[in-house]
Image 1: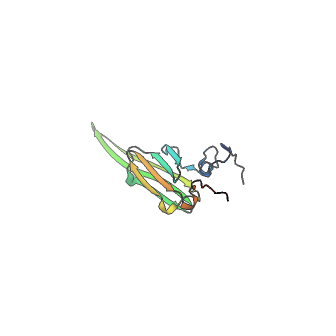
Image 2: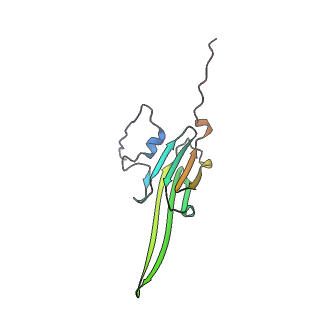
Image 3: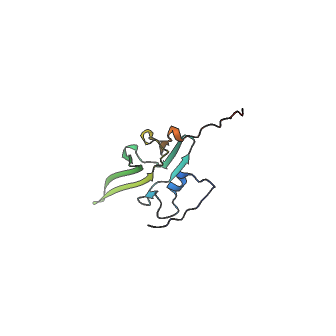
Length: 143
């Protein structure tokens, strides 16, 4: 078992901050390789939002899976091109792939996760369970 350094940013850090911290090699956020696209993670009142910058990537080549409390996003694209010039020929193969995995917090309703691909942005919404949403402040009457 290894010790993992924990940096507390506020008095009550978000569970999500701890899960996706990339400050050390033991982080549960794992990028399969360095070709993974840039990623934004937002926590809203009712959901978490993951946004991947993927201009030029086709949505058909993405694979998004939820398995045992883990969300995996992967992309695979294979192409080949042939060029014939001045009696020389060249054939090039192209392969591009990445995979990123995230541990899903218990507060997320994994059955309601949705994804969309618009204008080069892959957005994945992870809605929070109803019971974990913050309730409005309630005024208690003194009797």
